[in-house]
Length: 368
Image (cartoon, rainbow, N blue to C red; front, side, top):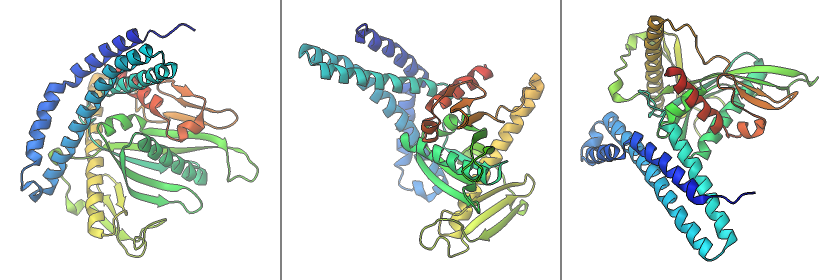
């Protein structure tokens, strides 16, 4: 095996990182950070909680992006120093460690490069993910819970903050639906490519004859609304129901009618929240979720009108976007990008970065 040319690898990564820094525009981002930091330090900021939330959220996202880019740059520039010291001391173990660090930095740079493709209007927002069981009965409910675990494990791997807002448990096994908020820079842009129908083929653990079953679960991803989005909701168009939370819960959660379900009558959109002890808090959270879904609906309608003007009849890319086959062979394949892996266990344990990267690149190329 030929020896690695570490200097050449470092130089190539420097070129890629410099291009990324130009796209992200670090000086402009630093200027924005200074402005937001000044706004966040105003003594009466929290007199207007909604505005304060927007400012602090933007500040956190901008700071996170700056720290990520500068941190990767620092690590990349440290690699040649590590290699030089290791080679001077003829320490094979240290040279191997420096090579592993170079590989790790390269992976982070490539992930950052994919993030630069996220230039949509709402891509830098937090995301609201909803998973629903579809065709397949108890199989589909179990599949929906497996998908929920997959995404929660993915978020855990990337240290994304997750707040589960509502989970409706099925009677026999699994879940009917769940909604959770993912808070991280570019969470919506990253996870939006996961929207669509996910199909599972496996030997059913619920079938006494061990037959193969196919089940479906739907994933919906919408951006979290901000104060500037202006989503008007007429209270007269809402039906608000309160009920007792179901399924596992902390002390007191399941003993009072604190859960809230809101139905938007003109669109039929239904949202629920049961993670707070207070009915008032649950209603406020549910209203935010409703606003996010109405914002996404409006955005999709606008896109549909533009597509009609352009003569775009390709239809929604979301339907049946990925197949997970556990029997008779093992494979997970994205039907849009043709990206596939032969290790479903790893995928279901949250290792979906390859699918997300391929999805983001596919979307960008289809939009250009």
